[in-house]
Image (cartoon, rainbow, N blue to C red; front, side, top):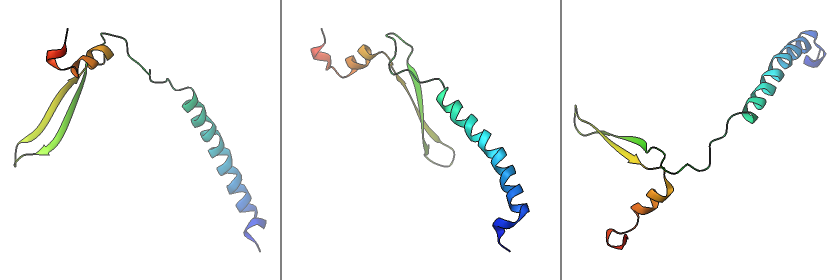
Length: 87
């Protein structure tokens, strides 16, 4: 007797399909309705804090660095202008 002729196979397949199909539909809907990240930032927004952990420098000394990175495009561009060329 083939597995596809078995009533147990079709009942199990139907239950799995009845459970997985709504879960898949809900997942796809939630991805579509998720809030999007803004592409730009407003001028004078607060700087972001980035903390990096570069590991250990000995048995008890953990080495970390913290950076404040501005999100203002004009202020960010001014960082790359040499100090002698600023107006």
